Image 1 (cartoon, rainbow, N blue to C red):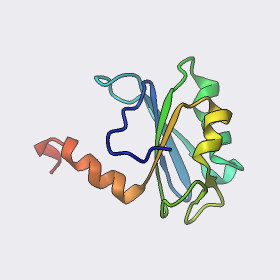
Image 2: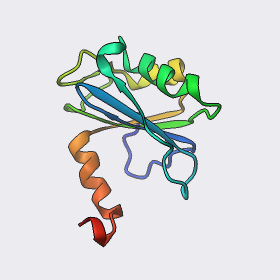
Image 3: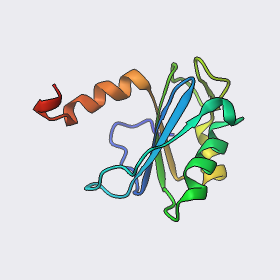
Length: 125
C-alpha cells in the first residue's frame, strides 16, 4: 500500500471508481494515454472487489496492470477498508497476490475528485 507522497506507479495502471452500487474499472497504459473504455459492474454481483476486477478487467484483456489506484466510497484507514454502502472490504495487501499487482493506492472518492481537478481544462471548470 502506498504511504509516501512520492510514489511512482508502474504502468499499466488499473484505475477504479468504487461506489455502493456500481464499480468502474479502466486501464491506463502509459503516462500519455487515455484510460481504456470503463468496464462497469454492479457490486451486488460479486462477493469481493478482487472477483469484480478479475471478471471485468483481467478476464477481458491481455493487458496485465502492474499497479492500481482505487477511489472508494468510504473512509480509507488501515489494510482492511470497508465500503460505506457495499459489503466489499478492500484489502490492498491481498490484492498483490490475488491480482498480481505490485502497488495498490486506495483513496477516498472525494479525495480523488479533488486531486483530479488540477488536470481539468478550463472548458470543464
